[in-house]
View 1 (cartoon, rainbow, N blue to C red):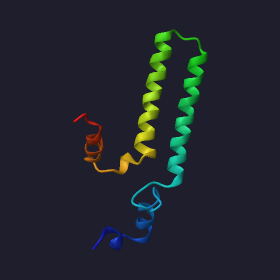
View 2: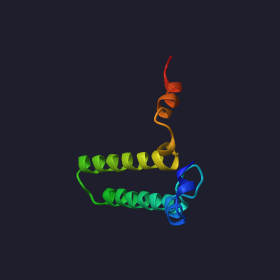
View 3: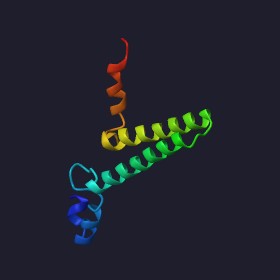
Length: 98
């Protein structure tokens, strides 16, 4: 017997608030929040490029924000967050030279 079968209606409803019921993936609002975060980081990147900061600060800041955006996109929009832990190992196997 599963937990869903023994849960009260309120508990069952609470368990499904964060996703739309499709393979444990979050609702659209979750992805909208990630998109807003990406837009804010992009705005910070543009602002940093116009501030006239020293080159090292500007390039370092841009690289840091770029890396944050890369991991957000890879983890959330490419659904890597929901893959098994062995998936990155098997998916990079084709990238080897031999």
